[in-house]
Amino acid sequence: MTTIIIIIVAVILVGWFVLTYNSFIKGKNQFTEAWADIEVQMKRRYDLIPNLVNTVKGYATHESTAFEKVTEARANVVNATSQGPKQTAAAENQFESTLKSLFAVAESYPQLRATENFQQLSTELVDTEDKIQAARR
Image 1 (cartoon, rainbow, N blue to C red):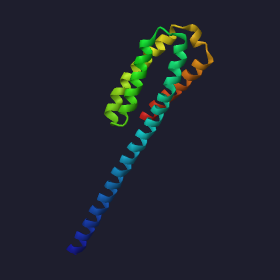
Image 2: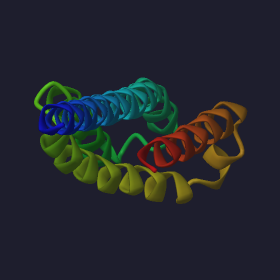
Image 3: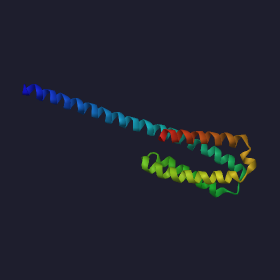
Image 4: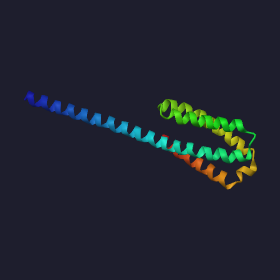
């Protein structure tokens, strides 16, 4: 009788261990997949930025420091993505602040905001930002 009880307890413990292990692996895979989704959207955003910078450059040639900062921040983020989430997050924060300065420059030029190319790039960038926020959730 005691042998049967020991076997039942052992089976329950092994079953609990297997279920717990599987849930940890499932969580790890979900985290990896979620991070990959975020990286895909961030890469899409990084690919849009040079086009946006070039469009704004055509109108605001004397604002070269803003363009240099955005380009430098973009390069920092691209390099940080291979170093892990913590470094990527820090570089992302810097990138977002420089991107805001680029939009501030764009706001100063009403004729720029009216161009179809700028509007399309801005719309795509906003869409990408929304996707990044959704992926982070």
